Length: 452
Ligand code: PMP
Image (cartoon, rainbow, N blue to C red; front, side, top):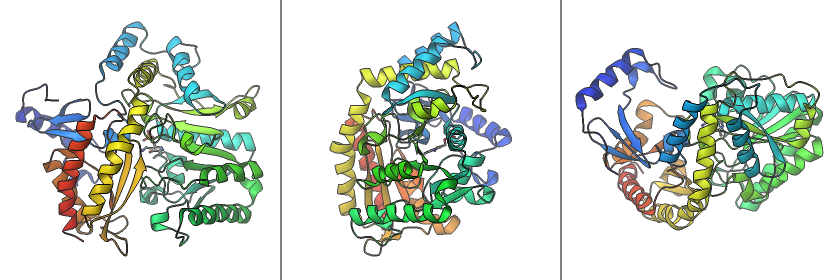
């Protein structure tokens, strides 16, 4: 893939100047950032105005599951824009009902009704609202190592330190430890021990909080931003059983793990569990137009059969976003993207990353599945001391910054969070592209090795 546009550093400088003058960026100290000016993108690559091309191992923010600028999805958005660009959510629109049908057919169990939002956080907000109204209870349990979005309730549920600055005292949110054997909060030595102790800890938390006060347990099926910790066999089924025992609504957040990312349509399928509510966004239409939603079980939908659901969004189920979702799902079916993600994980990314871990002293653990992988970088493989301290910034974060700079020098745009780098390319990344990414990671890890 070569850039379609000639390098034009002057145009790039103008874009940067306007950005600096007027764009207020997320999660950033505005004066300390220097965003790359991007001139274009296609498939697994994007390029800047200086003619540098990058292999995107971040899929944007883990959402371009079919890569950038897929021609069928671009055409579907254009056709929908010409036909009916927008229409309010209270009306039945062909493309909205078609998107809902295609999503409902792919979600597990009887999650047959779709409430549309504009993204992941709004999906989480509404899932919690539905659970509270359905149960008549208020408390919500979520995991410490988690990310659920940056709106009020979603950020309170989040365990990631990005919550700290805007934590409102957590308004009915109780956090617990989910399993993570490599850095076990339960001092477990085997997956089975980790699973059993994590389930016991959850039961104890519920017992001490008061089961009759708890509306929902919210978990990412495979926690993403917090480190791609694939849960041990039996854990999610155990949580399902606990929820059933106490009448608690089980919410799985598949905003990042859904739509092929793990090599199944939804990660819940790997673990044979069906939640009561499931949130989605990102990969639903590869992020081409903002869209998210909640897939709702028949039982919870029935709660709102004669009683109004008190929530809604102006752009809920926007026709352009739904057209992009319909086209994306069709592309994923026709091009067998989900099967491809599973295979690329099993045959290229998994083995390739494990091979890197054997050779590089800085790689403590490789975790993941499909097109969803994390490398846990360490100072010392024996002690598992992270390469940088938890939530490090500035000088303390220098080893990860050096790793990131080296990856970019080798043409790879890396996903970096704390002491981890995540290999999360498009789910339709080719074998050659995946290998190119592994080679760039190999070179960049040599820089990380210098800090072990
Ligand atoms: N849940 C999960 C699991 C996520 O990964 C994210 C975004 N990274 C969100 C919710 C929030 O989604 P959004 O940024 O679209 O609001």
